[in-house]
Amino acid sequence: MAQNKNWIKFQGETYEVKPGERALDAMLRRGAPVTFSCRKGACRSCMMQTTAGDPGKAAKERLPKELQDHGFFLPCLANDMTEVEAKLPDLSLCTQNAVVFEKNWITDNIIQLRLELEVATPWAPGQWIALMNENGATRNYSIVSMATDFYMDLHIKVYEGGALSGWVAQSLNVGDSVKFQGPGGHFTYRDELKNTPLVLVGTGTGGGALMGIVHDALARGHDAPIQFYHGAKTNADLHLREMLKDIDPERVKITQIASREEVENIVPTRVADIALLENPDLTGTAVFVCGSPDMVEGVRIQALRQGAPLEHLYSDAFEPAAPFMPDEDTKFKNLQADPELWEALENGKKLTRILTDFYTKAYMDPRLAPFFHRTTLQRAIDKQYNFLQDMFSGSKLYFGEKPFNAHHWMVISDELFDYRERLIMKVAREHGVPEHLLGRWAAVHELFRREIVKPAARGMIQHGIERYLEGYSEETMEVGTVCDGCVSEVFEGDKVRMHMRTGEIFCMDCEGKTIQGVDAA
Image 1 (tube, rainbow, N blue to C red):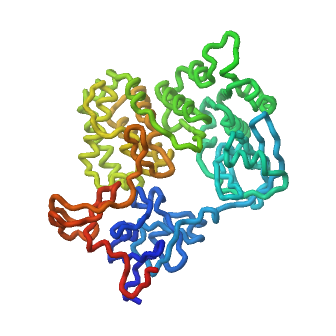
Image 2 (image 1 turned 90 degrees about the vertical axis):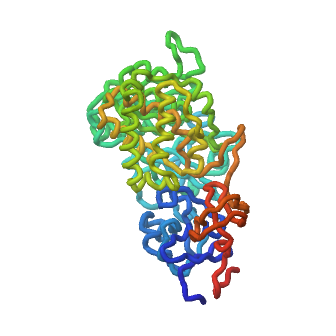
Image 3 (image 1 turned 180 degrees about the horizontal axis):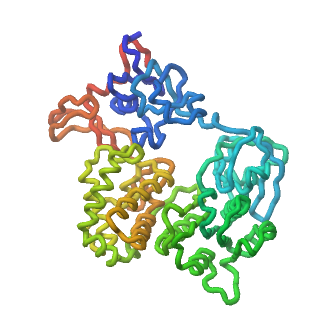
């Protein structure tokens, strides 16, 4: 056995971790087929699971105790490991059990599933659980009931060919045991909103989660107006009619609209449009929106334009199983310049100061800094300036990648997106940008949320085709450089291994995958 015990074995190959090096870098240096994004512990996309050895404290301390107990660790933070053997993480270990107490068809295609948890677990309506079928496939469903109701209620729309919804509809019966992950999510009522007007907009089964939030608000003594808007395609799809009858209309204004059926004297008939039309000034209002992704995106953008505070704009979009494909050309084409905002930014002079302050803070922020790997501070400022200049002034000076391709490899959550938005708005506010203009600025960022937020890295989209730039290629250097792995000199004509996504260059001396004395088989 080699004296150096700092190594990690993964998928039959063993990788030496040099002093001061992190395990992920060591593996990338020698061509390991690993998934990664931020490289600094923020996204968890590189997470692995030990089968032997110790990955060290730093590799585990940012993970919840449940994950640590199952041997999960982050190789991007592992710098003090001892003889680690690792595999891809088995997330099915992080589950709880429940028993199906009731299963009711509310409509022809919506099921109310009532679960009795085997272990008492706190939850709040609006959170989600990831229900798991017998094949280990999962799908997130919003919780409708309050924890004080004892049973956890889910409203599940059944789709033709749906792996999870079809299983619930056809195979799951009362008395069956089911597994789930969670609860998780922050789409919930909170006590700080007690004296804040609420506007809740939902479509389809998203209305169930919002109904639960309304019940929670009333139970906590909410002391401000509540307006609840629920929409569906047909009257038969408005599945909450009976459930909403016990809510006092003096306390909650309820509007239910079927968009594809004739409604006398009501124009428009889409519930989101009605909600926004009836609330032209959302200043000081908390907005909850839940349901189809297109509806959620539209409401968030317009709500910001109508004064809704960014910190009190809550949403949960029910993304389909198929990956989102952007149509950024249409968004850019339809976006109107904002001369008032551009003038308030001193035709770019104040924007430069704001972006300089913001990125200076972002580069020191432990949650944001990992996403600027191999990008200089000035380059980040310049790219964002050119992008926003086009958005606000109507110029056509930005020639960089559109938001989806620019962020395709980044694993960014809604929570992190919100965190970034709040920071840049805080900096802009400190520079004196008026509040009504801040909302319009935030709405421009909001327009591209779906292009940026995602649970896993995506490929670049070129001519309508998504291409994944993972793995390595062998290249011959046309100019001299230095190796990104060992920092040794690489000469013109040398063969190197290049990571296709990051562009990192590794000399052939970094390519060896085994350590003397350690069996890599």
